[in-house]
Length: 214
Length: 214
Image (tube, rainbow over all chains, first blue to last red; front, side, top):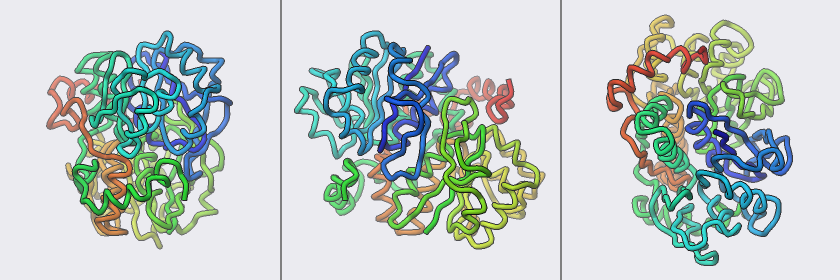
């Protein structure tokens, strides 16, 4: 089983590394970070570099596709190498997945039309443009398309996929292996739980958060 | 404020990237991945490469130190460049932190003697050797030393630290920004919650999980 995780400049690193940490633990899985060019990409603030180990040409038909998000997604909203690869990979994939605004890339590539999907809570209103129905769930499964909400939700998405691929005991073993028993110090992880002033402040800064613009 | 995240070969990537994704959002923070040599390190299975952007010599006195774990920690249990840097950095740091078996490196460097700390649940029994008292909590704060349990717990640790440094509203804003509102598909993230057979199976494989040995 080959798992391809897309990398591009100005992505949000945890979008990619969260699912990676789960899916790379699937027995027999070969997980490969793929991109337009081999070498290094940098995240949205530039302080984290991740290695692209395979080009699109080298991995045309992975079994599982993971598309992270982050401000850099805006460079992949038009047809181009990323869309072409996604459409080709999607032809034979058993699961096409995304985290955060990665779902906007899938939508723009035409892969989510008529489907239910999710994204970062600040980006959900963008789905209408591509005929996608947004939901407020953390992980949305519609056929082979599994989309996750913002950044950290890729861990939940990948555990869901791991269980579907290998059974509940495997999903549980991976959860226990990465000790994913969350006890955040606050209960502010979604807009319906965070204090209103915190939600409003982030909404006001959403162009920075989603697009990296100051 | 300078935040140094240690990288070394055969680390567990999420140990480093989880806290990074939180701490890099602190206003005014400069987050730097540091290691023995600039260039790329690879995680324990080799399929993820992360960039080391500064050497120990270039970052002798960061304000915050984050030490990830993973099978590669066994190479840093004896005195050497990593211990020397940690002891020097710890002299002036305001917080010295770890995720997963990163706490074993801190312990071996002599920085946790007489303190309470945590680690991956499979590694807690190793603390006695260095005079450290293990606890079963997910995040343990003892003075300026904040240690986290296995892999994913670094996110909780970093949110705790963010709140301590910048106040609750900032911690909440970061939690909301990364949409950390966990809904894992299983409730198996700790040994007291996972099915006994799943715990036993992982315990039997612990030398693989902790040390990367087959």
